[in-house]
Length: 456
Image (cartoon, rainbow, N blue to C red; front, top):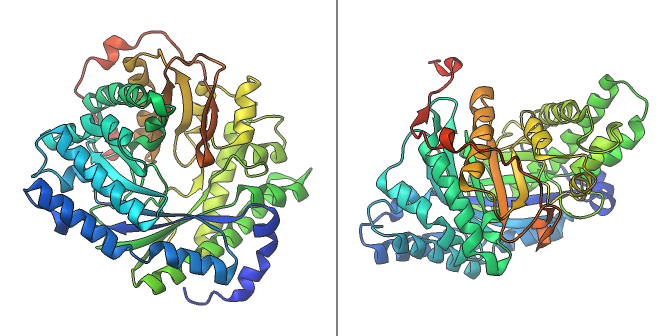
């Protein structure tokens, strides 16, 4: 693991300067289990002190590595133990949980990090009273904080889908949009619903520090869709074998850059190295698009027939190249397809090439799921829950992580544009199937785990 040398970094200089290669994030995972106290004031004090002590050098370390190696590190982030666990004994009201979110936000601001994740609950089989209380607090926690991100895991291949939690999340997402209306409904952009959520994900909004992790851990997310697109320019007219080899070789080089940053950050912070997440995660910048990769492969637009096959190829070959470059590839490695953060995807939606139904099909083979999708503000809670249920079923049956980060735009209509700015980008409001699923969603209970879950 330690045989990376500066020559490998020099080889990537052109990728960094001309093709938008970057390390998307260094995420420091921090366990808060030793902060637990039944007094909410003591708990908040413990949390603030723990985070600001452990992560005091995170931002500076990232900046130092950037300067020394010339590798852009876009985000420095923190993930913490799911707050539904940490606050279970102290929190008796929604306001108690919101006070923890404010403490997290204050710590993030003090440290200068971009986001802090872990305002989370893991409820794939059932909800404790504390977990339900945290979930109901999410809209207000996100409205009253700037840096806090939230996630809720409502299903898994082992346990099935908690449909009570799915129904609740349909309402929570709508409420988060309503209460954050004055700030462009951005609460929803910091909230994700998972099936099979990983413990070691460095990417927001879904990052939390899993209970299987050590006290502290460094996870690095590396990205390079612009690099991949450039590499595929040379593959016009070649067969799929050559195409796959190019994707693998390019993914290998990208991952080695991330490996170097991860090892350096681990050494300088004296925190164990966890995983490299090799995800082709787009940005709104021109040339940094997953959709552009599809076009280089030969599709007129993302969403054209063949798009799901192209994404399956890309996702698999990226992982194959990544695991040759590092022994510790994890998180959500593969390709992300967030609409608002990818100019090519935005264009495809505007031109009618890409619909929510096609995006759902693509989530069967990508790294995450329905991501950063704007929908009309009058979409019913149960319809949102139905969209979540469909995506959770894909994850459960296919033994993969899937997620929904969907944004009802209050007063927004199909075709309107929803502007969030920065890395979150702009999302065209997309049409949603409005046929009712009320009676299905309102059944409650749990969809059982699939037959292939019975392994031990």
